[in-house]
Image 1 (cartoon, rainbow, N blue to C red):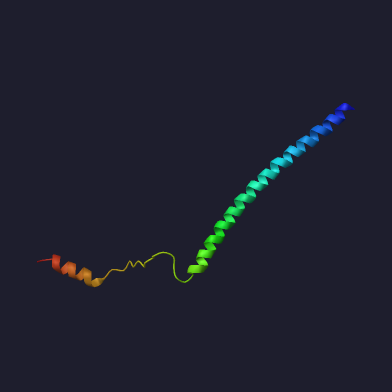
Image 2 (spheres, one colour):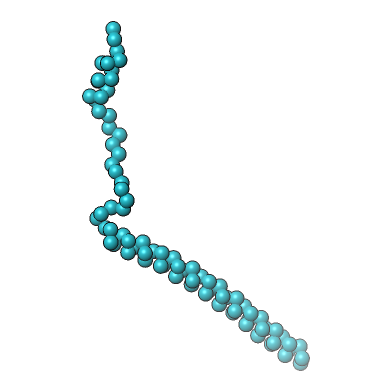
Length: 80
């Protein structure tokens, strides 16, 4: 009969330890999620304040070639 009492106590203690570990793990994940949500909220706030204004100083890049510059260089360097 004592083995039954020992098994019940061990099971109760084991489940208590397991629940404590899971609780700590859940708290750690909740804290991590809260930090991520705060970060996303700050990004959304900045975007809402600057919407339509652009972010930073971005320029436009054109890969076109000006024909006039090429003709000037060719005519000035080619001599017959």
